[in-house]
Image (cartoon, rainbow, N blue to C red; front, side, top):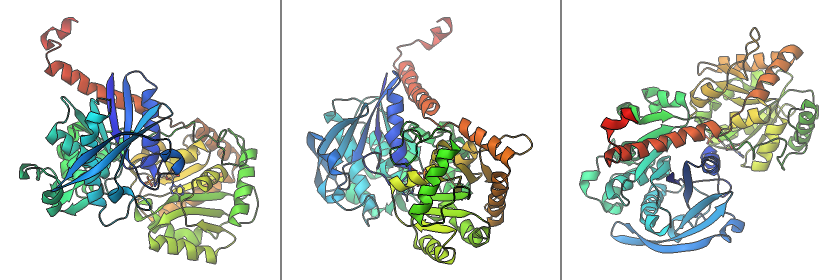
Length: 488
Ligand code: ADP
């Protein structure tokens, strides 16, 4: 059995800003249901984590973490939830703040956290064989693990959830914070800056990303965000494992937030639609096709395309509901578009988990024309709530959504190839024509009903990945004589 310590910057149900939290909140549970690996999770203890969780936490130890010429105190807390043990690293200076990210010293905060993860290892009553670090915030955990070797035979896996965000800092931080010899600078530096994402990719024993297509794409300059050459070098150790969702939590039959629970019933789904139309102040009509967007409002998600065609699409007899927060350009765009089309477009510029679930339940269609998409969870949640995704064929969207083909009757959504507004508009118009064609629509919904994205298969792939280390260790320790293997 492999002991695995996950480490990341967010995790449901404690703290969430995006899909990373969903993954860290659900994958360990799925892995722990098998007997082959056991996962525990380590996170920062943000002030923002609700009190009802914080009061359940127990103190494990208080330790000193070296940060340059100073020591920072860190307390390790723990709690158990749904069969998973969670550890939290607290530090008043770095984590007692409002929100999660967006501070001028975010880099320094996660240098501290990454070092704290390593320093905490002797106090956990749990000896990991593998540390599995996620995204730039914990890339340095892989670097510290390789350089400081806190445990014998400790291996690391680094998962890239989004290569656009790399955790870049001035190179002077290395001398100020790392307490390491300059020999190690090269493995952390990229284009004259310290780069946490690069450090993770460079130092980890294995690198994964969250879909097979994205694993290929990021080796290309268009998608690699400057790190493509390093990824090409590491391509033997790089794999893409598609994300799943917690199908027990995201389940329209059990979801406590939605007004009318359902499995496949379109009648019940219509009740959710009519409720949402009321909430959003749109004309209430269960027959009207409802398109939704639930997203960070950032360039990555394809909003430049939406900007170009939304007015034209809203000439059709449709409704569009948008939930999101993000860049001012897109928030402003949706805000003003809503004023132009009050009967057809409704926008909420906020982060609201309950409303998000009510929107998935109400929607006929889910729009996601991403410029790039490592995996994407929202299209998977949409499918789970029987909303038909309309996506661009990139990364995980390409791996999870197949365009409907009216001749063969195959496909669980609509897709287009090029990052081009007219292609998006065409896909939207085609989706509308299928909606109004009862035979095609029923066939499409049948395909949607069959689309399942639980963690089961992907969890097994991670377990196999961890097991590769065990096999390698056995060989290297001479426990198995390789020469006799054929006779076994
Ligand atoms: P990201 O790139 O943001 O991680 P994903 O598709 O992987 O995108 O996951 C986004 C997650 O965040 C989903 O669970 C989605 O429902 C949720 N989400 C995004 N924006 C909002 C919002 N404004 N309010 C509530 N939930 C949101």
